[in-house]
Image 1 (cartoon, helix red, strand yellow):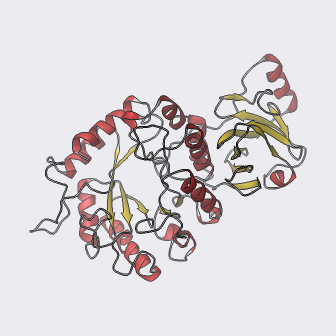
Image 2 (cartoon, rainbow, N blue to C red):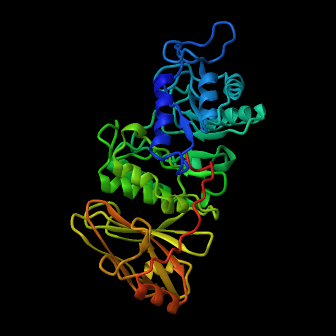
Image 3 (tube, rainbow, N blue to C red):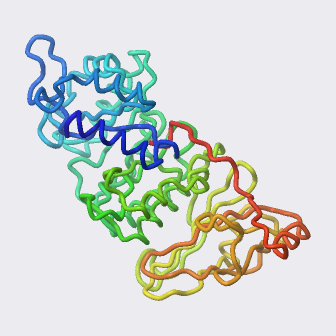
Length: 407
């Protein structure tokens, strides 16, 4: 990590269209720091060889080019990579970040004196940094990462469920350890699905970063699973943090991350996290299907039909699925395919309209492929007329780009 590379990332976000799509934060994770604090002031500093211009200059560059500046620290004495942590320096570090023009702070959970899971200690220490940020008077998005020093199967749902956690603690809080592949992605999605009641405006469950399908990325997913993650993360109102190098993303990744209709679901102003409305078999194992849904501010519902099995098949919203949706039985709905950017075609699904309470099926490929739809109540005649004429009825809402979610 160098200041030159960070600037190249910012430039790539522009050239790929990601910035125009709403990705406006450039966040530095661990390893930006000097090996020790300043011997005179006690402040954190950037590594002098890799950031010779200093961190404030980097922040100024990002702001000048229309970005927001994100940075990393840790509640322990050291970061996960062994650089100076913020333990016992919370006010000094918060003010230092504010002086640099930082807009986003991620605080990690490594090298804590009482271990990674001592609730009294962790809520007190994370809360101390929250208070220190507020004391600076600078608006900063505060992201708590309880995933540090955790095993992949550890349960950290308490960051959402504990009375000291959730929106009282931060703007977002990790609810699982790191997503490093398909299995951990599936676990994070299922965990987040059970925590919808704890998310809302200004406070979001964080199931970790997006993994691209680019071979250049340190961690990657298949094209199918990467797109499914983006769709499901939008249903879950999760922070959208791209984990792969933007300058090396494949065209399919750029297409995924710049889909304005899917981003609009993620950014919907109702700020109501979605959930699973139906599943068959053991979720995310072969021969199982999962249907996710999220209520939107315009009265419509976004849905993702996922096929975890090996073979292409129909995934069907039947009685149980419809019971989890807000539509009155018999309501006729326009069905828009958010990846095809058109009304759902009959060859791929039951067609451009659905009737609430009547089974609706989508033909979905296997191995984690998904289909994403938006269902909107419409007048039957209007839909029929548009279908006959071949017109593409646009029923999606405006693509909101609130900076509290899209990073």
